[in-house]
Length: 181
Image 1 (cartoon, helix red, strand yellow):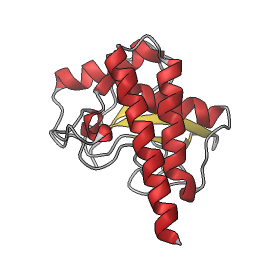
Image 2: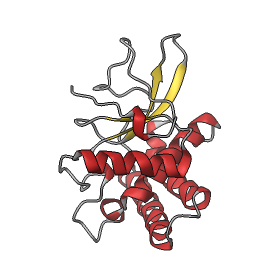
Image 3: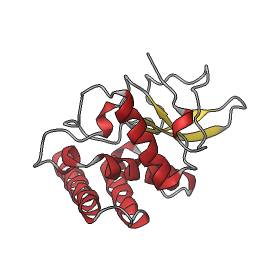
Image 4: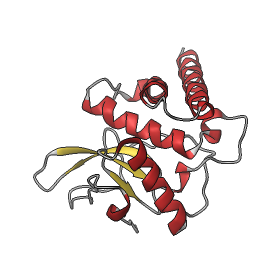
């Protein structure tokens, strides 16, 4: 798996390389992709990679990030060289929106998606996340709402996108509960 690290573009935020004990191809307890299907699948050029890194740095330069050209955007928990669990946002080509305008998650802009991933980091750090898989959509909804509040400096359109994403995730959770009965 090709993974690129762009630490020169994140204004000093830690960029963590996976340790040998971490396999980025497998899902750990928090390595699930945050974004639903329908997001962009176009490869990112150097300009886009830099723009995303600068967006993350502009929102919060203290959150560790890494670009993975083959991976999906997610918040992950990895072991550092001292076997200490460390949170990191890994972003891929799906950080950009897809072409589906009706699907709130597909239409979520890059800035809003970055804010959402940073909020995952803080919800994990503050122990307010819902890590159980059966609450995944509720956790994603809470994360989008957290991002809408935490990053009120986002353009109003992006804040609305985050709120619409939260509504969609609550609906998906409800559908899952109804279908389980």
